[in-house]
Image (spheres, rainbow, N blue to C red):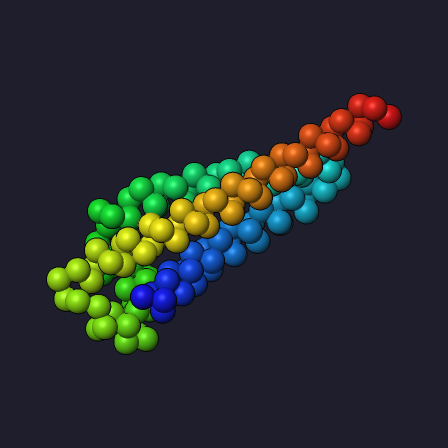
Length: 127
């Protein structure tokens, strides 16, 4: 089960890495205005959070045999270790749990970016 959790984390973190790269590139392009860059980064993080929550909501009803997690588990020989009858259900439950865990971290990043945006705006008005 730990190996399946590690594979689910790998799948999610790879996708989040691409989302983070997109957010960082966008924020760098807007770096002429720090408040705007932070605000856009927060909105991108919020959109990523929404995507994670939608995927977590859909995970129990998803056929995991057509997922990247299934392909990785087969490749590592871990799908064969699971009971035949509940293989897809167990993968969906693990994926849902890990999606929610990552969504909580992305929400924290969004809140930090919004807080920094607020501090930058406050500092600019006090000058």
